[in-house]
Image (cartoon, rainbow, N blue to C red; front, side, top):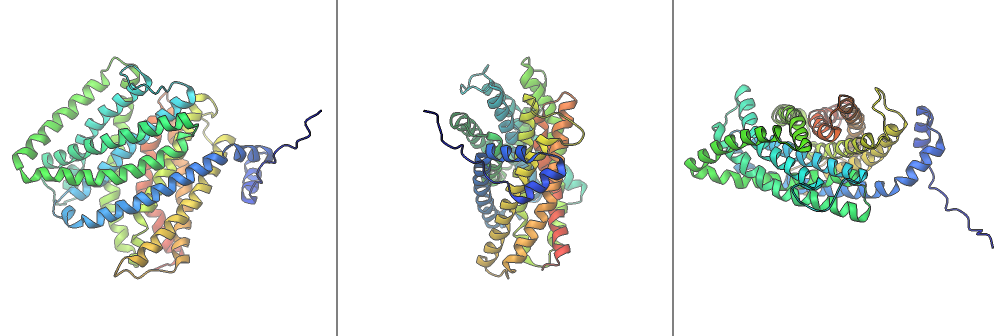
Amino acid sequence: MADRRRPVPLPPVPRPLKVLGRLLGIPIVEVRSYWAQESRSLRTGASALGIGLFATVIAGVVLMSAEARLEGIPGLLALIPAAIGMRGSIFGSLGSRLSTGIMTGEFDRQLTRRSYLGRQVEAATVLSFATATQAGVLAWAISVALGLRTVPVLDLVAISLIGGLLSSVVLFFVVIGLARKSEANGWNMDDVGAPIITAAGDLVTLPALLVGTLVLAVEPLALTIGALGVVVGIVAVVLGVRRQDATIRSIVRESMIVLTIAVSIDVLAGIVVQARAEEQFSAPALLVLIPPFIANCGSLGGMLSSRLASKLHVGLLEPRLFPGKTAALDFSLVALLGFLAFGGVGAAGWLAAVLVPGVEPLPLLSMLGVAWLAGLFATIVLAGAAYAAATTSFRFGFDPDNHGIPVVTATMDLAGVLCLVAAITILQVG
């Protein structure tokens, strides 16, 4: 007897996506098929962003509780964005490369020196040592250039080295565990990697840096660790760029340049742009939006960068000057996730303002309006930055997994605050 079962109907396409499909010349059938295939990505991505939002709030509480300690060490406030940015860029890129490896079939669960996973971890280890030193030096140099008080450079290097290595150990477990879990359960790591890694980095890096400040109690020890950190950082870079293994060598060579630029932007964004934005925000309740908003921008940008990089590697995306259908559909997925994420930012910011003593909360609709409008601006910027970084690096023969997340994260650290300021100005909130 013939099987008379009716096929399961595909989920309806929201009207905004139908309009988007028509504007981009994408048939509704393709839009419907894409969303049917990506329904699981939407659920996992939204869950990961929710976890990231919660972690960002916890990190903000830790930052507020440690404010006296941070202000007591000149230059440490400049090091924090550099250290957090480095951890997010290194391990976000590691997660992106592992996601590509899962998609191409190169990923293996064995952590040996010659395995795919082992070589990726070795490259990230080299970068962790090198950039821990680099972050301390750059934070000191930029602080001096801007006329800010700071402790000696070797003290900052010592704090950065200890904090960077402690947080790196935790993040290695997070990324490797996430990759193995994604491969075993059939998850798309492009969707869960960036938000979870960003959240973990925000949670562990600041406490790790606070542990690192304990060495300042014994000045000779701080100087010794700082000097050792400089030597180890230089040796790590030299060994990395001269490594016989082509994979490790290319990762270190490509990453060092983009990470240097990214961390410089992170420091400037943290101590200049965000500081001035805080002075311009007339309502203290709006200040609560800055950390979770920036974190969500980085998570969404990292998610999109990782998806584009994976599709470039397997030939599903062509590195055109202007985005094609495949990229446009990924943009639409990230836009919907952004709508949910930035709505969560507005609601969480309002709730935090209600609960924090001495802060007068703004109406919930005002907070949501600011978060959504700023999120709209930010989504446009991060989509352009992610696509440009991925396709440009791929066209020049570089690995987009090494460039996409550092470029997008640094861009949004700078542009995210400007998007918030623009939204507040337009809506005249506060």
